[in-house]
Image (tube, rainbow, N blue to C red; front, top):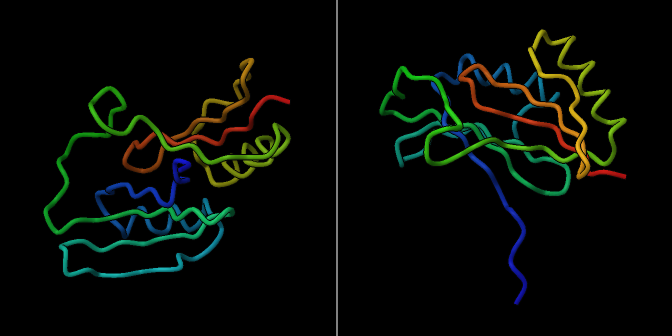
Length: 131
């Protein structure tokens, strides 16, 4: 039996009123789901190319005041796959247009990445494999 593909990623945000418009602008689409659940959170979910779902959750229990840190246990970063390095150049232009700070395209033997952070400091990346 093969190990299944990643189905979805959900990250907790402090305020959907801030993060919702930010992710809408980044993704360039409205979410496919905007739902208040009985489980104590409100979430927005986008369907990405390839069928993976990406969601942002605001829980009824307020988030702590601390910023996200990849140095704590749990999530390090979320990476969105691109087919080629040239796609990263387009994303770099879009991030600049949206006023989103980033680290520029970084090349490594295994591929190239473009790192940035959302309004809560969650580490995000666009990544294209080498070749």
